[in-house]
Length: 475
Ligand SMILES: *Cc1c(COP(=O)(O)O)cnc(C)c1O
Image (cartoon, rainbow, N blue to C red; front, side, top):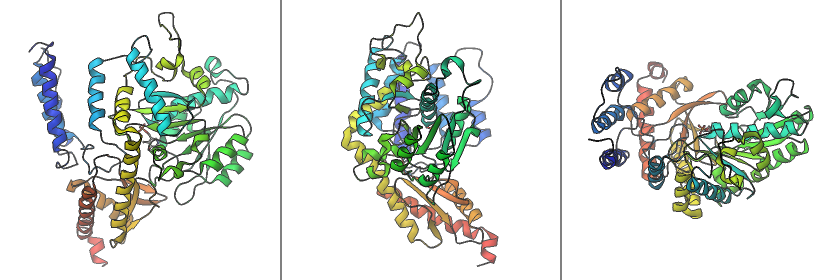
């Protein structure tokens, strides 16, 4: 085979992909192979001589398949990991095929216009101000970083400090205020930003993990100087939303920039039934959102949105003699992203939004919330099973209490579920207690998938109880 034989290579990939996707609903969700098996299949020294591309693809498929965690299964509920909508996958393949460098309008007019269009659609669906700037980044982590780098510019410019030129040495201290239950990517972004995760002043939370606005007022009253408040739409454990009206008005009274980490939760704004959860979020200064979670486009895809294009561009914009800037800076993605060369991620988002339409996105949001409620209803009826959170969105926290040590028992149930393979959930610690976290994030999950999963969970719970000698002796 010649390297120029595109059809043969893509044909092999299409066949392998279809086999994988058709099998996703029935295969065991957990990987079958262990590390040593994967290393045998995929490791070894680099061959000296070229190999046949079709044989290489075949070796990749055979070697990798047993080591895949089937996150594309409609019964995968681990972490907060979305599936992939077929149109998103196809558009993503074309993105690789076209291999555009989505850095400037002049380098790929199509990628620039598609991203600009998709940005407008996203602002429409999320009901955010139309003047916002949007950066297409790799995920929630980089979206938060991108928004906070814009925030850093603004709050320091407000006190006369040019952080892009002068850096942070000798700069006025920037205070960051965030809830105790924030996502770890906030701390990580602060680490990358040169503020340090130690710059955070913590605000207390309630039983659902929501920021306490009265405590926020007290905290803000004690701080002087440039301040950034980070709030959250969709707690990664409970799915809870901070009370944005109170938070944003208190923060703005104090002259602070408000960022909302809305990796998956901000999508609630696309649904008439759930929008109230994120009411007031539109008044913030920036938002991070994932597309690879709830919108179900392939990894990796996130969005950094700010209502201050000037600050956003001042922090990230880049020019060089050999780069041709566009008349409309919105079309030059390099102004909104930390990358220089980058993948044209917008194609998959554009295709997914266009295929779903506004109503389809709303339906996607509501369906996944309904499936989460179905889990909560079925599990809370079972004996020895406790649902720990108010299920407002797609997250359900479950604890198995019918044992002397519910923490250990819950961990044992999670291990048994992962071993069983019908479905897959991961664990967490919620306000000091071990819990199993169910996140419904795949467009393909049906009510029957939830029924089968509940059955498997209860079966595994019994199994774990029987194999725990302590539990038996005390019953
Ligand atoms: C997933 C998540 C993140 C991180 O997003 P990545 O896409 O993994 O970088 C941040 N915040 C919350 C609330 C999340 O759920």
